[in-house]
Image (cartoon, rainbow over all chains, first blue to last red; front, side, top):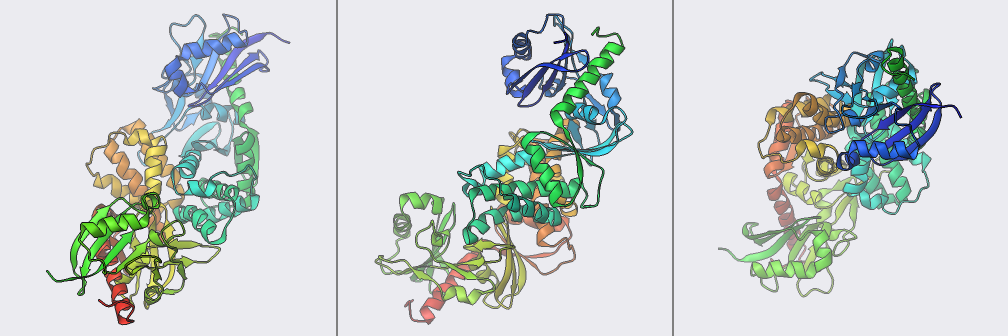
Length: 307
Length: 307
């Protein structure tokens, strides 16, 4: 096993992931926990990080590069935003040093769209974009999640982006409305057909979103149907609504890059497929790690870090 | 004061309203409580009703006519549904007797749309429609609420209707997502400007609903803004989304009847006004009471009741 050169951390709102990396950008060791910003704000960011550094046996001098909500105002140290149009390379030049630490720890900035008609912010996804596309990439990128982001990138510059509360709406609607009765005790069976037709229905008539959701209940009342099927309909409706806006209703687009992992990747690939939209898929874990590796290289190239 | 002839009850999911009526259809006494179907299912429907009958001093022989969720499967006695296309007059002929009671108590049926592409159900709103339009009415009717209903009525027949989870989405989104931070400790001040522009934005780009909601948060982060303003934006976005579907994106419609009361009536009137759509407004309390009075008259005309 080659020698550890630095530590890469993706510190989100509700999740923490750490990788011990060698100089070539290979993963030597990994840690995952739910000590995201919300939990770490209570425990202490330095203590959370140190516990994971100890767990992977990181030497005392190893530097750390972090992206995500650790750089938010409510996070560890505010890392500010780069404004759109934002070149992905510029993110690398604006890493903020965490003061008062024995080792060199830096947090990457987010991106802000300071448009009063379409205000938006991202933290962490800019690093995914950098890793997925490189510093001169070009694509319309869909990054699903609690707050899904769609970014239009040209020549390595994030021109515009749009956040959809899709994941969070799914939770709120499934748990906090009458639809909680429809999905109660749902098993894990995935009703692909129900999901697909819900995606298409919402894509074709997005204005009816709040009615399509109610149909999950009224359809079950009048025609029956399983709880798992109800869950897939809610999920398909909300993802179809997101795709209607992200694709601007255009099924003929062929420049979409999906950056996602695991269950979400499968779900969104199915959603795009339901609309016959071809996508290129990039693993989001790989992408964020590659982005953090580019940041580490950049810090070494400017002699801030010695890797 | 003229003599009490019958008792009219609007028994919703979460609210109970009772009126002591004379033969002419005037209100002699009123009761309101939160003993809706959910609460009454635990306490017992007969006991809840009797306590309110006692409170208004209703004589033991006075008959009772009920509409709403008391007729649901989970209610007191299931009153079934009339299927669309449903003539409003036919509701009057299908009142179901509550068995085993010392007085004559009847519950009106709901309306079901047994269309697998657009399944829908209503209970209580059919009585509002009857009261608002009469037995040969004609209009596109918007009935706002937890589950807003839009009904297309021609020649006294409900041809189609559509339910939107607008009110419930407002609660779930305001309380169960990151937007709860944006609306925390909001005062009562109504930011009419924020509400109006949110209505227009969602009406014009309904596919962006899940993004417009996120903008409530990102806009506050980047540009500030009060919690009350955030609440109005959420409300305006969800109502604008409903109106986009209800009006089928057509601002030139002039046949809309709004059946609502109080704060909701004011809010929806403002929403329609933001889109320059003229509406005729009918008080929903008056409407449901008039509908129940028509049912009482009908029972008397067929000699089932002696009023």
